[in-house]
Image (tube, rainbow, N blue to C red):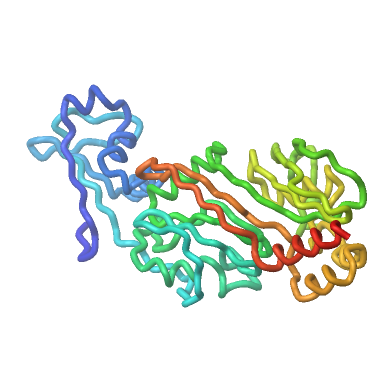
Length: 332
């Protein structure tokens, strides 16, 4: 059972422990917070938990039940295996970092994790280089991606650096305990309400597998929006997510508000957008192939300390330049 780099955690169950805890997995993750229940289950399934009670009698352990008082439990934690994903020295705009989590300001054009067509140059490749103190998630030494931004979307993201932080953040995102605020620029050919709620289930598009769509078989999705400023042909809006479905903002704006995000080639028509915006904005967009969508604010409770953390980053220069031109045109 021994390995040079293996860690052995040991604890003896007391009568008081049995009074306080009904489940062994809850007890062990309370005593060893870095494990996390998902990882503990993997160790259990791989027979890496042992229980012994004097005089050297084996105890059959069950995660759903506390063993007898006096049981000495040994947990054999193997060293994290290196990930197959290469670490790359890609510059990151780091907003905050500690031993458990890292916040970054993601630029446009960066893919989150390796996939066919984008095996390098991703956020995961960059994090593997910058986070040399990764604790490992599951059995693999890797950063924990707990949410995503589309390749063209800019703004605040968070990643976990250890198992416990990863599991808690996944829970918080699934329960919508996260503050997420976006801003976008949309071409407005018709008047839209100053504020509203966009609600419709989102699932895979039935014909185009690259797209998502409002569909009866989709998952519930709700987006709150308000107009920040209207410039006639162009409107600056703020959006807050109540859920976090793939392409949620892009789908809701295009399908429910009937105003796709400016320069969104998947849900809109960037060529038509540029023609309607005029020469100055068209020139700005000519060399920018991404939708004008920015993740402005991300607020969480720290997954370990429970301290409130909230980061806000300004939109990129191209977004600001188009806003400035919109103000100039509306003032004429």
